[in-house]
Every structure is written in structure tokens, then in C-alpha cells.
View 1 (cartoon, rainbow, N blue to C red):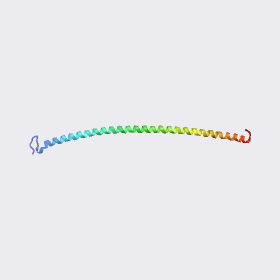
View 2 (cartoon, helix red, strand yellow; view 1 turned 90 degrees about the vertical axis):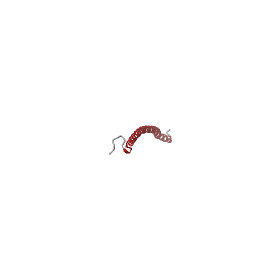
View 3 (cartoon, one colour; view 1 turned 60 degrees about the vertical axis):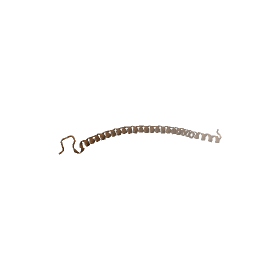
View 4 (cartoon, rainbow, N blue to C red; view 1 turned 180 degrees about the vertical axis):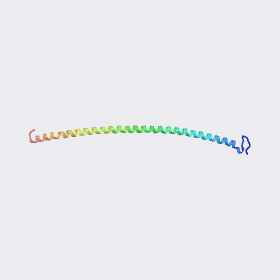
Length: 106
């Protein structure tokens, strides 16, 4: 049986103090790792949000640019169709004038 005092045999008193200090140290390390992990998570989330915002802005810019290009192309097509319509509308009148000139009426 162990003697009833504060210094058990085999240095358990010193060893227990070392174990407790090591547990405290590991607990502190774990807390620091948790804090760093949280900081990193917040930074990553912020970076993701920044990238998402930039991508959305680029998409919107491209959309606006494409709409402007389509508007220009539509305007060109309207002008071309108007010119061809005018030419097509003048053809019957020109044909009548040519026919009258050939008959000598004009």
C-alpha cells in the first residue's frame, strides 16, 4: 500500500503536473487553430462574394454590349429593307415609263 503523503512513488506527482500542463498547452493550440480557421473561412467567404460580384458585373456588361450590337444590326437591316422597298416600289413606275417611252408616248 502507498504511504499517505503528497509524494507518491515513481514521481507520479511531477508526471501529473506535466500531463496537466501538456493538456492545457494542447487546448490553447486547439483554440488558436479554431480562431485561425474561422478567420480563414471569413476571408474565403468574402473573396467568393467579391468574385461573384465581379462575374455578375461582367455578365451584365456583356449583356448590355450584345444588346447594343443587336440594336445596331437591326437598324442596319431596317435601312437596307427600306432602300430595297423603295427600289421595288419604283420598279413598276420605271417599267411604265420605259414602256411609254418605247411606244413614243413620252
